[in-house]
Image (cartoon, rainbow, N blue to C red; front, side):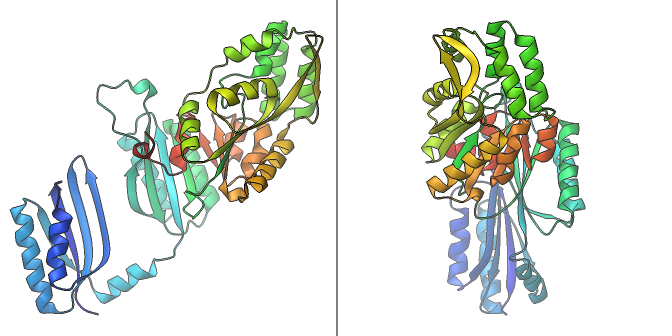
Length: 403
């Protein structure tokens, strides 16, 4: 093997630096074995691992690079790489790769220090760090700000369960979200995103709103909470709640639909997904009437929910057809994936309740969104600090690609 040299260049970013260096190297017939560049706050860091055909050409070329960079006020360093070192680097090819995503309203050094300590503890090596969110002015209101940093790591974590537990403890302690995913071909090839509706796409439980209108709000809300925590069978609890709505006038439905609070980030997320060619679906234990209202408002492709039975302008307290419970949601997700001609790995599922766990568990990316403790503990990924559009970061997108 001929001489190998690692060239490291740093300084104020300006056009043409890479061009100047590679032009010099080309005259020495150098091969570029690795290259990487980052710009942080207009400061450039450029690295190239090159191989020269002869020692004489190497020395002359490096002298020219040094002179050219000095004329541009850039710092340059050269490091000789030995054959064993190069062989060790090549041997890392094909090792397991992972993506660790840190999300918060504002990211601090403490959060990064704690996260990277866990990564090192589990013998993973960070190769790359990228900011996915846009630039935030200093005077911005941090109440609705969002920040996301993505870490690319390689290596084999010997205890994935403990690694996830460590991340979960850190997320709870520092009020952040941390996602840990395998870096594979499916991450940027998802094609279908399925949402729960109540307390996911909207910041309300529609059945509770109906119950308030019927004067039985407290009784229904208590049953709803127990069901979402997984303490009650969904079908039985659903029938109990529905029975309490008997006699409600149909006229209240439209008023409730018009007042539904759409979750932070939902409109941006679904608009972005539509532009990118994704299909979207509502798979809800709520009601079709409200699902179709959101479908029209947001531009969602499919809606599957319960059909509220109304006779002579009055709610009967019953539903028609199959109840959309957890198992039904998972079945519908499978059917949609098959109809779209994609694998389950290409599906994203998002929900907050225990009845969402079956679909979260079979989707390639299952996300517990502002979920109950039981659901956060069971789901592989969770988002609690930001809005729904944070899902775009878990899918690998940057703000500059979308806005």
